[in-house]
Image 1 (spheres, rainbow, N blue to C red):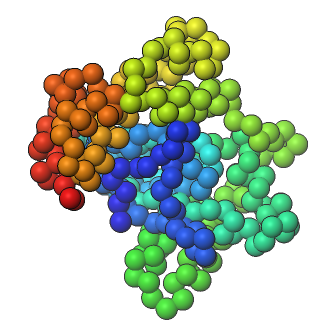
Image 2: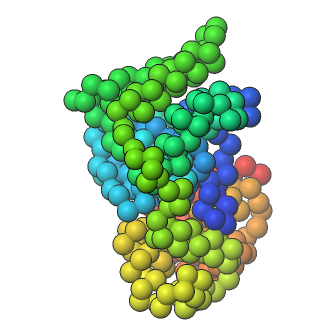
Length: 300
């Protein structure tokens, strides 16, 4: 099942449940054109993620890295890294996502498996992400296993949970057999840019319903306004103002779908100074008015 509007907290951490405690994995296909803004905006989560492009072409951004993937190619995104996905083509662009908590493959707390083969990789600042291509044998093997996991997850035949577990273990072995890290140089901390961005996101998410000043944002990371804007644009690939607009539009979606509030009330509740400006930005971003969107998606 596709997640159309990713829920995130004030720190930009995704709050969507990725499976359940007893079986901490979620597998789904994302069709970018069905997302509210046509792309998956910046977020992060504790789970590691494998993606496989099933149609079109997709740009994946992970921290400061950008990867353009064609149909049949994939990507691994490590735990805790900011990432987003945007389509390159106007037609259908989709990809399979596999998100799982590495506790699932760690045997038990304190085990050799966890200490030697899992934690050094998910805590490494040497591996934020890497591309999976068909012309590299071990990477092609992982791509095949992503397809297998997707099939197992939705067919749910006898022993499917066990088969998924075995397949994940095999995928992880492919990674640690072929991706080498210097464990002596391993650092748990992410880059200073990554940490500063999380602070900026946190401030925006706590204050999006109010007027936000650039100076206040810059002060949260102890930079001047120019340095703050440059940092954000360099990493997030849009301006702070553009990001705030997108975030406010995304937050307004729940109000349109799940409340009887007027368009004006929704606009003010989500930080827009006037309802006309809200409608203008909403149509610019989604190619429909808030009222049209509500009529198509209203739940109450």
